[in-house]
Structure formats: structure tokens, C-alpha cells
Length: 136
Image (cartoon, rainbow, N blue to C red; front, side, top):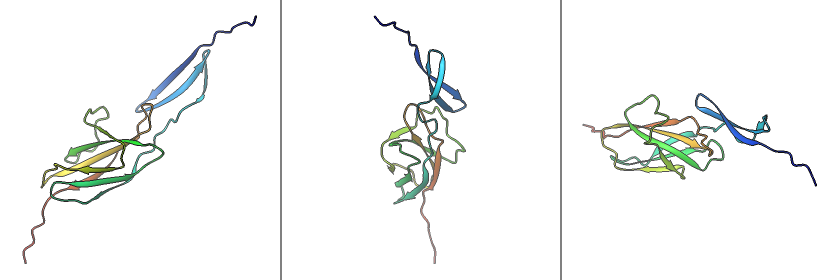
């Protein structure tokens, strides 16, 4: 008969500011990071197909993520709330925004969701909707 050795395994997440670093602990000893500890932000956010009340927003993935969160804020907020429940999950790197209001300024925030609760910093693109009236 073989002797059984108790094995205690725990997944521990060390949090510092807004970044989390999961590690594996076995019998009280910490082992190498087993998961990604960074989530690259999206890049090159772009606005196209703008009308008086609609716009299309696109961006490039920062890594291998397949989900993003976006937040449409009216005005020029300097940074969105990290815990804001208004963030919307999407699996497409293209947003078709409608029901926007003419004559308004919007800031669209986008961040990557790398899974396991790991999010990137948010990038944004600005959008001003209005008509240009020219007199000749």
C-alpha cells in the first residue's frame, strides 16, 4: 500500500490597483504565474459612416481577445468608472451605434476582456454629431 500525501492546491489572485495576478499555491509554496497577467488595450479606434444620428466604431484587437466592453458617454469624460454597470459586452470589433442625438459630443470608451476577470485599460474615440451649414 502506498502512502498518500495530502496535497493542498489553491488559486490565489494578488491584486494591485486595477491589475490582478493569479498564481498557483501547492502545499503553501507559490509557483509560476499560470495565466496571462496583462491584457493589452485595443488600438486604432476609428469612426466611420457618420450620419446625424448614427456612427460605426471599429478598432484593432490588442491581443488574442474575442470580447470587448464599450461605454458611450455624452460629453468629454476624462476616464470612465471602472465599476460602471453601463459597460456593454460585445464579441465584434465593430459597433454600429444608432439613436445618437444630433448636435451632441460623444466619447466612446473600449476595453478588451481577456477572460478570467482580466480587463485592459480603456481607449476612446470622440464623435461630434452635427450639420455644417454653408452660406455662399
